[in-house]
Image 1 (cartoon, rainbow, N blue to C red):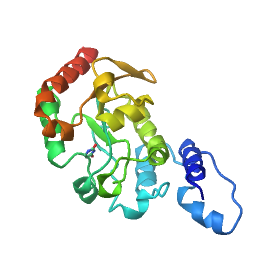
Image 2 (cartoon, rainbow, N blue to C red):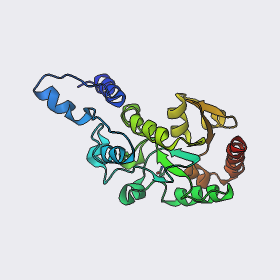
Image 3 (cartoon, rainbow, N blue to C red):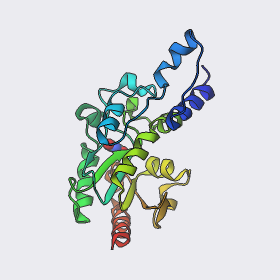
Length: 219
Ligand code: URA
């Protein structure tokens, strides 16, 4: 299958569009991205994510990383994808970057248990490479279902990959942060990824400004 064909199929799968395929080699190859009907509510969604084979990452993951937190949270934080530690533990943001994220949340008066934390991808890209666009597209429906169920009052897009995917933009974080975006009626604020802040601590002030902007939306 060509790259563009597999991308098209992944997009269709993400939209829940069923593909008719001839039997034979092609059918076997596409079995992995065939869309699966997801029932209503959290449990069917969790089950669908746990069993997902919509993209290649299913082959290399230890487990899916669904997301954690309060299902009725005001804050929804969306990062990039699980890293090695998250893939092992099945929970997002548990490494060093996760610790810093927890600190940032605490500074904003939010405990980790109060918010909901998810990622653009539910599976770890090998070697922590950037998510591919077909992987993000294949995973999008899961995130959209989570947003529908949580109905957060604010979404914090954590880092470039999250911001660009959610906003359909290729602008850098520096240009996307500092204002309130709208994601289907939900206010969305962009901030730096804590892994970046660990490398560039001088940017922490700006991340704090972003949290203050998010807090001002909620007031
Ligand atoms: N970085 C992310 O963007 N998400 C995680 O879950 C962990 C690290």
